[in-house]
Image (cartoon, rainbow, N blue to C red; front, side, top):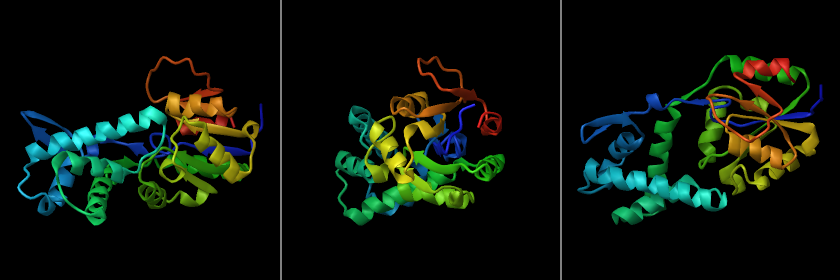
Length: 242
């Protein structure tokens, strides 16, 4: 079996799980679902003037979609503040950088509450460290402080030599730039590294395009032309392959 020097981990839905059901409930037009929208609206109410939630929700969602389109277009990472700049343009809301930052903090506060950490992942990380592997995180996320805060909150930040977040690099997986940045940070060559992730396009195809072997954490059934070296159901299974 091939021996690697370093293991790179995706963050969300690989190490830390996002549980949408833990987001606050939103009820609108007779339908109920989970979203950060109600929390953000409540926290920012004093800055929204006469705006009601029914007027707030549509531009809130549209600003998210607009940000996704920007990212998809060129795989550049736009910080979360860009979303709320778009929101303010759509609503005609006036404000400064301080107001935008308050929007970001409120949104991230709600997202953090929906993140769950499986405790047995710590055992897996400890096992890899004991085996002598160098560990790093390579994550797509538009607010690096929140990603780093979560790693600290769950007590796993110290396992990683480097924490590479797309907001800080400026590029998103599967763009090769973020993988090359991670490799340069470690001083490792692609052939000596293996990448662990749940997203077929961003994690598996992205790392493979850079010559990095990969492990797909298969959270759901998906058809793919990607060819990971290994497919696992849980990080616990890493003990059997590396």
